[in-house]
Length: 435
Image (cartoon, rainbow, N blue to C red):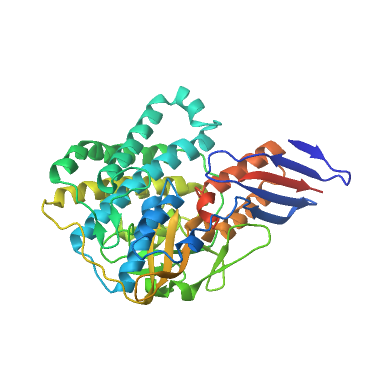
């Protein structure tokens, strides 16, 4: 809805931004064709997970934190189990880590497939929703559903169910899948590799706005693989690198007046987590086929155009399918599902790479394993400042567009991040004011 103000300014209200998870608002103020103010106002009520984790047992965070999000519950489980295992001084077996990686592959597959085809592709193809898009591109939508189902099936087998998995515990799993169970999924996963690589070519053909941002990219990194369930260290595009345990020394959360969700600074400045950061910091860890597909799609070894994040996500989708097939090929029956974990007093940090970016948890427990303090920092919360910066640049770049087209561009800029606003409150009402 658009209306004129008495002073000649203009306010554009979009009651709810479609194709994101959660509720919030965006205020953009333009004066004399210059963007003077941008605010991401997340008004979804805080959910107080950190508060009610205090006083619970050290074994409970994997089940409790998985309920924070129905799309990326494994990210919360992985970060929480790693933090608790660090505190308790135990290291799980390579087989347990391999199965955690396989579970994470399932989450990346279902989440990336959902975002790429259902939430983001309609922007580039000119449709209001995937339902309208399906009339013209039925085969693409069928492929998308097939890809997402493969991820859901993988999460259900390894995690016990596709939404809020129940097979994860501190120290490992309650049970391991058998070779026969895993092999039954293999044909769909093999097909998923080819479908995802074909999808890279498809999305590379979209019309992308010219826009680049010189953010500090922050992600996990591991010497042996592209980061999913864990990394050996945190790396930044400005050359900073440090162990996961030191994350709280570099990332500071803080309140802003216009949002219920906390913002964050990395060494005092704006930073960016997510597929673009992972890709640019860890391109060399992608498989040869995925590297080739990315370069053929025109990405280069780094990517700083947030609108091209859809290509990067599709490359990661193919990588997750490849990784899942490799793990199944290596799996053998008879492996222990868990290791014993006895509590001890201490504080620890765990981190993993959610589909939307680095997520980290910090816990402090006493000698009996009772949680004394908890801190959960999801990727959307960390990216709020960069989202606002993108919107400022996008609104200025397209300031002469009419309100309808400017709104469309701003909504696209937000969806580049695949924001999970529900996770970030521990949009969308879009307002553009012109004068």
